[in-house]
Image 1 (cartoon, helix red, strand yellow):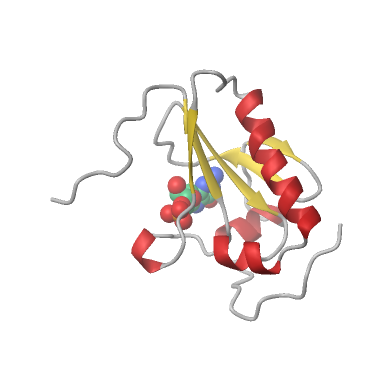
Image 2: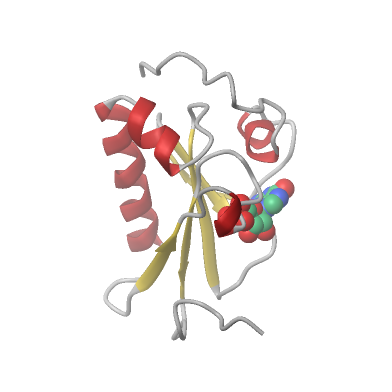
Length: 128
Ligand code: 5GP
């Protein structure tokens, strides 16, 4: 699998980079040569899987602009595979990807949250 040159803004010690290197354990649910999917450590729904690319991309924008078409295709195929594997069709599910400070992105490695297994309620919680 070809990947593009490293982004100098990418922190190679972020927690998902460490999971990819096997330095931190995860509960893997699926992988292909472009993506890894594992359970979120703090689930927000009965099914809460994180899907991450193997390449070093900080967020959705970085991934979309720098990843190869093959990486992008295989990443989204992994997301779809997990949705089927977790029996989220046809009841449905939600995909979320936080990007940058306003979103509250905590881990600076592009990831998609795949949430389902119950009615998920409103898209955003109301500000107090
Ligand atoms: P973000 O806010 O960046 O979109 O989401 C980061 C997610 O990563 C959070 O939902 C958090 O629970 C999850 N997370 C943080 N550290 C770990 C970890 O070490 N293992 C796993 N499996 N999930 C993590």
